Image (cartoon, rainbow, N blue to C red; front, side):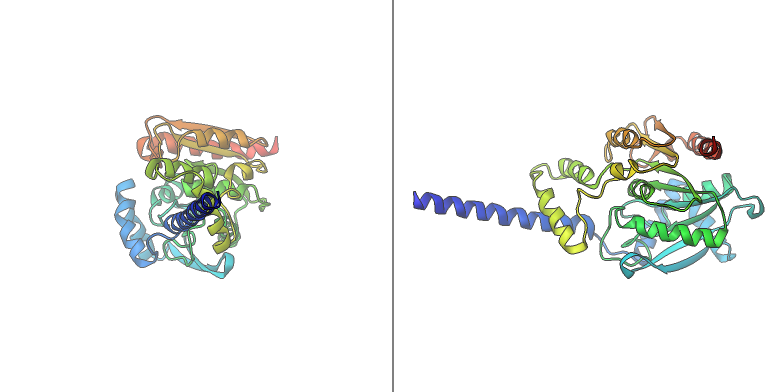
Length: 321
């Protein structure tokens, strides 16, 4: 019996050690992938053009003319964070300011199609940051939107000081969408009037579990607990607390949810969880037919612009009725 108990204890210890190692590996794998910086920007320049042809030339020309500019601030946990900003095509009649937030592993350069949409088509000023550990921003890990929301709140102040607008929209895609939804549950300035969330996940743990099932089905779900504990010890937050849906429960400003019905990376069930979680204030959704992850604009560019434009047009009337 003693031998049996000793063997059982040894097996339990081995499993515990294996789980800890797996959790450490998963936290490292998910949150500290390839390094950011200049190489990251160069890596993704072609991606911007693949999403909307001519984007890099558009960006480079505006930058050469001094119209599109860079700025850096001290962000959350004292890391330097970078953003670009550009005034509306017709600054004198600008309709407001958009803060455009990129997704996981991307940077401010990738979603130029949205920057161009807001500036050239909708006549908005735009600020578009690099989240921590992306692009030109510093950082020790990818924060999955949870701590990024604190930097977005700093960028809101910067954008307001630059453009002096009293109408601001937060627009994010994928992890960027999760970021702006997470931001929406915090106390925000009155100038922040609405949110557009394109294919964002409802929580980090739910998204990571989906990734696990897709790519590492042989790893048990329990490893998420271990990885969350490692992340909590390293960075101060855990997977279960990082929830867009919980933040949306506190959100009172209008939200437009967008999701592709063919998205299997962030499945459409996340849309319904997020939509249901927002119980206060106006909300609407658009399911883009045939769109895979972060593909709704490319699949339906004119309808995407129209949906966003119509939503922004009615926001002031919704708030003051």
